Amino acid sequence: MTDSRAYPTRPFLAASVAVFRNGKVLLASRGRPPFVNVYTLPGGLVEIGETLEAAALRELLEETGVSARLLGIAGHSDVIVRDDAGKVKTHFLVVSFAAQWISGEGEPGEELPVMQWVRPEETAALQLTPNLAPILARGFALANSAA
Image: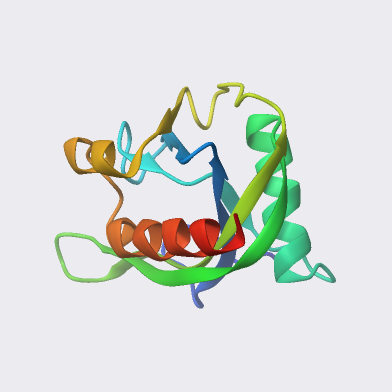
């Protein structure tokens, strides 16, 4: 039996990727709840038998058409959404990687309908998913040290 993402009995493990190219990071707006139209990093659930790193790169390619080389972990975020009664509606633990761009431009799709390459100073003007700002800051630092 598969655990439902809505009102789960356990947290779900996910991986996301902050891809850096020429001083910019690829951000995408979400097309599905939670946080519709809010900017985030491409990513998704880790599958059984898949490493965290492999999941991050697979999800990045599937959702954006972008290939990248992972540089390291930029941080993590507990995404816990509660309903009006206080019951946990969704719970994801997202581990976010920083990565150096290899190829692809970032092709929008159903899950991530809007994508853009953004400079660090431009992120403050965007509505970001919770806890994303410090992850981006660490990601920019990792990308700059790798350059």
